[in-house]
Image 1 (cartoon, rainbow, N blue to C red):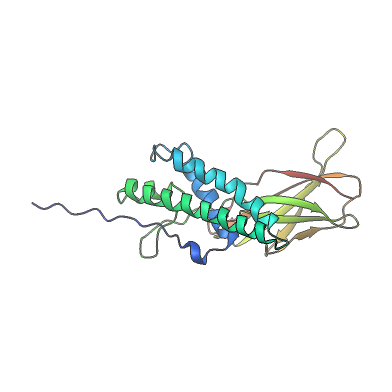
Image 2: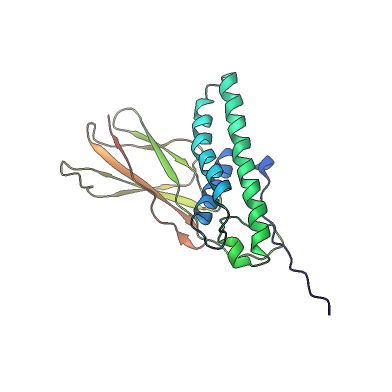
Length: 214
């Protein structure tokens, strides 16, 4: 009797149409999903390449802001490194999953349209903080989950004992530019963290970043 062929679950991944932020977010999702994942025991080599690319690509993006030819070329090269690592891992995940959606989704990848998949929790963004003027800090969200609807930013002054004081909240609906946090006391160190809101609720809080207001 002929046996039925297992249908391969295909990864949803088209780098051509992905922004830098979306590409980094996918890489972070896959890195988190595959790290110490017993369902994919042979991912370590390509995972190491992915993690290296995730470290270098954001730096290359920042270096290319001024538009220097060499910096732009390096940014493009690092983007291709990240894409290459993701493609290698996508092929591996598709092969090893063998039609098992639960195993597939644990990788951090999402499936193509037409393949049923359960909604997944969103993950917290990463933050970078710069000085603004007159008691203002400028916060930049990076590695934002593309499935997130909105975000919440919290900040608190750090006392002389190193303990954070009262946390204050600020809603964030757009992360395309720096978010100003104003009304701060110059000379005081502040801790900042954020979380994302998606279909299944809030993510956990991101790692805190500290910066002194000037």
